[in-house]
Amino acid sequence: MKLATQDRGFFGSTYEAKLSKLQELGFEGLEIDGKWLIEKYDEIEKAVKATGVPISSICGGYRGWIGDFDQEQRALAIQDIGAILERSADIGAAGVVVPAAFGIFSRKLPPFVSPRPADEEREVLLDSLRKLNDYAVSSGSLLLLEPLNRYEDHMINTLEDASGLIREGNFSGVKVMADFFHMQIEEWDISESLRKTADLVAHVHLADSNRLQPGYGHTDFKTGFRTLKDIGFTGYMAVECELVPGDGLKAYAEMAGFLKACMP
Ligand code: LER
Ligand code: MN
Image (cartoon, rainbow, N blue to C red; front, side):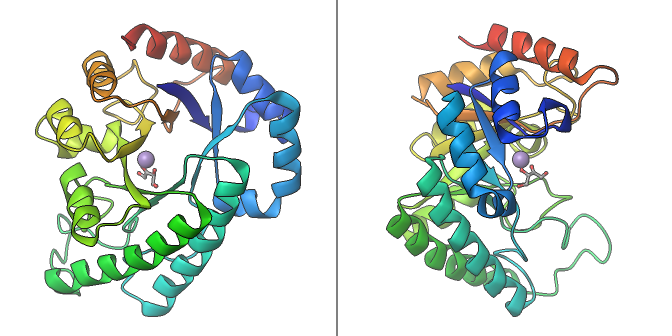
């Protein structure tokens, strides 16, 4: 398993500076926004070659959602993610992180009932995934399907929700993205869920139980990492968290030390 991180302003203003800085801090890859990947592809490609530090993964940077209520927005999401998948393959990233949706509806908040019936929600997701699976397979990249907690999304909350859709559609270009922050809220037992999804877990997001940097909440990363190793996970775990107040570089150095100490 390899440590990656999402971007921070204090890593530097050019991609070469960012990649060098994160390596110096103990990280092995950068997770970037899909819009930046497309718009700044040449600079990013040069920076990867110059530093030898890879783009681990892509997250966000497209219009709409694959489970959008609005058909036009859903079509835009498929079109944009398709283009990002192509570039993701070109740059050698693990894939493109995509949730069903973010912040369009929660069954746990008023009005509690989704405007779309449950069986239709599933059909919509299967349709989007089928189209994106074709893009992923033909480009040689992967769609990394991310379950979010119940307050951020109402369609895919657990690893089993994601793996169920992937298995039903037999989508070889779609894998599961396991985020420790969301798993801490939604899974009965994180290790048990990881074991049940062993064949599909291809990427990980790291944040503590309160979304703070690992080490400042109550998530048991040692047990989680042990399980990831046991199931043969060798991919990237990308930091996606808030930092404790103060010097960001200091927080990063401390976080790298904490995470490495949790690894088996
Ligand atoms: C949002 O909470 C999140 O975890 C992101 O990775 C969304 O893709
Ligand atoms: Mn995440």
